[in-house]
Length: 123
Image (cartoon, rainbow, N blue to C red; front, top):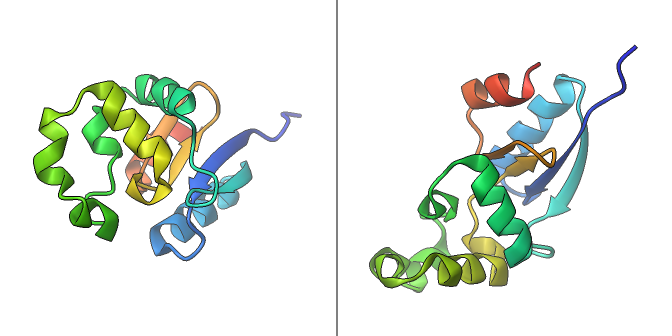
């Protein structure tokens, strides 16, 4: 008998996409530890590690449709910033981070697409 796999999901409870992702993970029998991304965003060190594990560019980690992103005019500022500055910015404000982030410590997904979840978390 296999033990239930645990994943950490950085999410915002009022976010419909996050709720859909949580529901999907639970339906697949995963044990989900939910972390409120606005109250407890991942640290710069955690983000650095997760970004590397995800294989995604740092810009893919930004919630580009969010109000904070737009208010800070990040579309124009990000190209000028170093990776370190971008990671510090994400760690400083959970509202800037695309959600949900799901990780088991080795694999990471950002955002919710059922096909991606099926590939990464489905087995």
